[in-house]
Length: 179
Image (tube, helix red, strand yellow):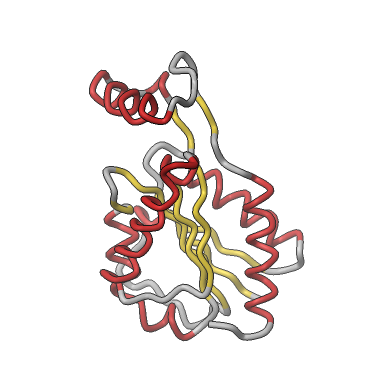
């Protein structure tokens, strides 16, 4: 199977997640092309791929514009073959915010017209050491509401086992021709 993984990342965690998913799918004997949505050209051809994974992080309640535009433009091709969405956000990592993370996905699907066969809500990372003052204050406000985690170091919230299990389920679905 030939799988295309397109990702949109702001701080690098979604790229890391996409690369891990690609490596896992390759280990299962499939071909994978991994593409950064910010580097896509307008002549993207999807026809020779058998399945698609779109991974995008959420910032200020929206997925990356490059990913949203790409999916909107190609939703018919994505709907015609097995496809999956990995939505990466802080909300997905915080137990009391999972419903909010699902709202981001619901809005994304409504705007783009794409109906992914599978969706994974996955926690991202906090990179306190790279934030400017305003980013840091916003993140501290969000995190303090939940009581997690220490605000003195970077944190990675990604559940790598959930990602591996999701990739395996996606391959099973794709082999069965699910769209």
